[in-house]
Image 1 (cartoon, rainbow, N blue to C red):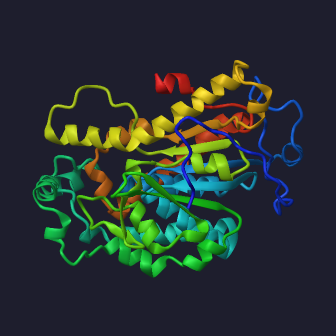
Image 2 (tube, rainbow, N blue to C red):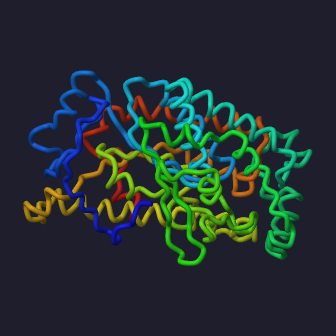
Image 3 (tube, helix red, strand yellow):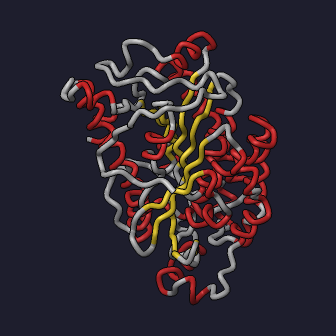
Length: 389
């Protein structure tokens, strides 16, 4: 388990490590005014020669909207020149991370793509068991936003009037049953190529717990995806956990400490900005969900931006500066498309909808690779000052 540092403090103590088995994973650049060390580390020299670049991936949770991340990963895995060192995931992002690691161990990049394909196609097969459902009019009109579907109102009313311990006393969960069937815990733990970090929220303490690769179990993945109004709390070693999105959606700090690459690519599926004032109950609940599940990410980005400014402005003593890691933040998002979907569609597991999101993710990732490749390893491709306000 990774222990969380104090907020806003991002030290990285240098430690002696054996030579990497993967020679193209770059060493962490030391902080300098432009964000790069005066002398590139050996790994960076190799990267310059081979044309490869190494990143860490931060996968947000968001129910079936995680199929957007499926598409993003599918496109990124096609790029042999893009190396993935670490992956932090929450909820649906945790499932994507686990299936990718499992597939990678079994068959490399193509194995990871196959495993993700199989998982999401199986999720699509559960659609009839997962409320709410699209109305006949929604199906005819091709509308994916089901916020105003009659079944959405019934589902919301039931969830807020009764707890899952009342409506589902046996704790039936089709997604958990699917994970039990598909997840190979040994394959995930044996995947030495990718470091995995999965976040869940402790119900008792309200703190995040990050499960690392060698701790991952089906229960840890489910803990990260346990929405309290929908499912029973997931217990691990006698302690209850809820969805990790409340405290880390996803958590970035484990990759700051445990990974060498300074680049973090956030796969953003929860809109940060939604113009206008929500007025209906559905709109208010939708926006509250988005704000809640983005708050921890924004707090981490603010801490990273603060340290970046200290480094860039030369406000740190040399000894302190050497112990800090200058992070480069990137983001793959399709906010305009996601805004139109609404919160209720996160429970829509129709295969056609999942495939629609996959294609959106592939297209968005393809554009991101073209526009941002030159920024990786050099600087942020996200304007954090503008993003954080």
